[in-house]
Structure formats: structure tokens, C-alpha cells
Image (cartoon, rainbow, N blue to C red; front, side, top):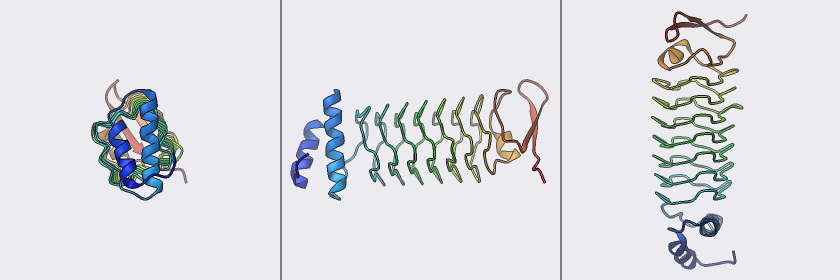
Length: 220
């Protein structure tokens, strides 16, 4: 996109912001990238239709993405620090290495998304859906709120859980092998099943199909 003034870029944005076909979504991505690269303010992105948009590496700190459709979007390394993303739709999006520090993603949908190596420190994801998502490879979930989040079948290998609120979180079939700083109290507050894969230091004794006892047993 040739060099345009802020006024021209914002005029283009108003022209395309409600567009829904692939070419219009691509144009929205180009305009947003131009605004960011020229250090200009990013307009509100709430409730917009932007599936498959490419916003890799953009700084969207404090952005309003509530209800935005970002299905299959390419958002590798994108910065969502303190962003408002309640109800965002990121199904099957590529968010590898993105930063969600202090973001509001309550009720967001990240089904089958790539969230490997993301930073969710202090993020609030109450009721969010991460079913089948890849949240492993050292993703940081420290002090995040995953109350009642659906992590069915999610990969959480090597994820860091210090201070994470897992109350009512569904971890059925999730892969937690290699997870760090996961406590028995956190696991008891969540919902697991016999298919949930746990780190080696977490020992579970099943009493029935729904009742279990667990303890941490570190090797010396």
C-alpha cells in the first residue's frame, strides 16, 4: 500500500470496515498494518468480520476486539496486552507466541487454535473455549483466570500454571504432561477424566468415574 496520510487511511478504513468478502478482509488487514507501521491510532475492531486476516506481530495493546471474528486469522507474535476481547472468535487461528498479558478474553472461542508459546499471564478467560487448542510448548498461564473454561482435549504440555485459577475448568482429555507448578488443589478444583494426561509428579487415585484423589509427588 502506497504511503497515505492518516486521514486517507481512516477514510479507506471506513470504506472497508464492514466488508465481509475475502478481498475486503485482506484490505482491512493492509490498512491496519499501515496504521500500525506509521504509529497511528488503531480504530475500534469490535464486532468486525476479519477471518483469515494477517496481523502478525502487530501491537494491539488496549485494542477493542470484543465479538470480533478472527477465525483462521494469522496472528503470530501479535501483542494483545490489556486488550478487551470478550467474546472474540479465534477458532483455528494461528496465535503462536502472542502476548495476552492482562487481556480480557472471557467467553472467547479459541477452539483448535494454535496458542503455543503464548503468554496468558494475568489474563481473564472465564468461560472461554480452548477445546482441542495447542497451548503447550511452555505457554505461560501464571495468575490467569480460567474459571469454567473448556479445555477439553487441549494440549498443555509444558505450560506454566503458577497461580492459575482452574475452578470448574474442563480438562477432560487434556494433555498436561510436563506442566509446571500445577498443584493438587488446582486439579481438584477442575474437572478431569481418566483420559486426562498429567505431569509425572501428579498422582491420581480414581475412586469412581467421577471421584478421585490426587497428590503431588516430586522425585528426589
